[in-house]
Length: 130
Image 1 (cartoon, rainbow, N blue to C red):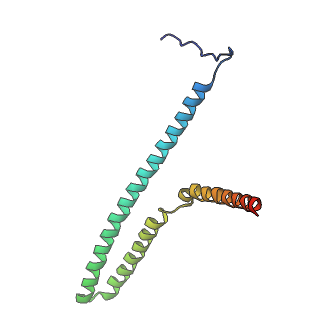
Image 2: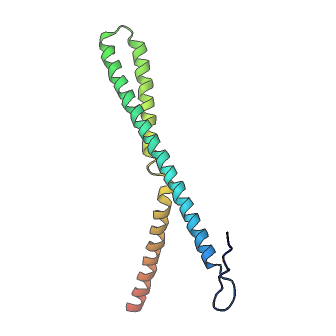
Image 3: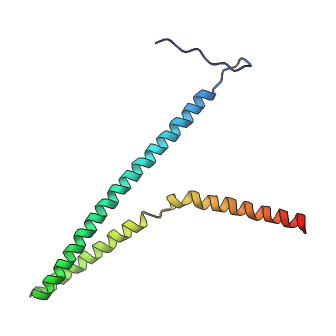
């Protein structure tokens, strides 16, 4: 494979611009790929949790029906309590993953940055006007 000649800028020195652009693009691409993989993993977890939640709710209803017709009331109540705790844990997992600091960090800092900028511009305009 023939070697490509080095690119030279008009002043005669080597230009690293294409290399740095390619590096930035590769970094951005790898970051997008990581984000996509994390999103896929989160989606799969949500699907698993929803399926498990539906199974537990169905089992809870089945136990409630059995409680009315069964003499092993204490055993069924313990199982019902355990199912309730598992459902609460799943609901907490589903809710907590939606809003994490990582997902709110960028919008938060943008609000701080532009809110602060708005205050500064307001002060400048007020001092000019009054």
